[in-house]
Length: 126
Ligand SMILES: [Zn+2]
Image (cartoon, rainbow, N blue to C red; front, side, top):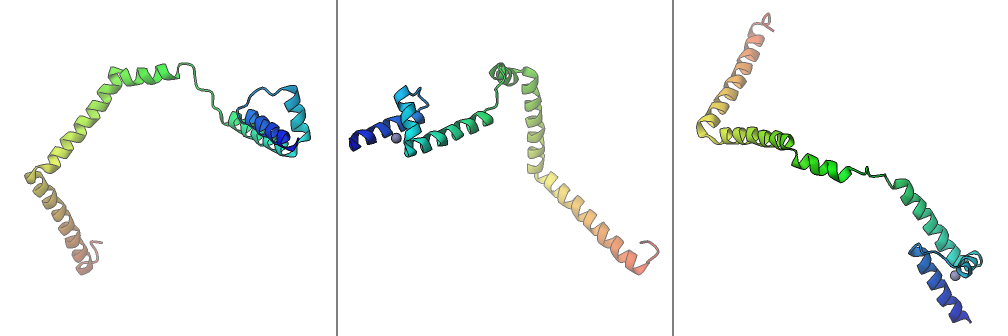
């Protein structure tokens, strides 16, 4: 009798877990069995939580995504951006440009130092 009851509990809890339609006998069993009742209420809570999280996906969602992917204008925008990126990357790789950038930033830094020294020597400039 006890083994039979245990078997019933496993079966009922499995049905609860799979969200299957419970027979009248199993429904009555849940009401009388503490462990099955606990499982049932846990899954019920879980289901309502999942339902509250479930965002409705618009019916044309996939179409819109595919349209965006296939849209030639979108693609053009992307390829133009990549083009600009590539140009800058190549510019920074040219040694003459690297020397130019370093020289420009060095001059800028020296100019700041020069102004700083001058502002100490001649306070009216600052
Ligand atoms: Zn049970």
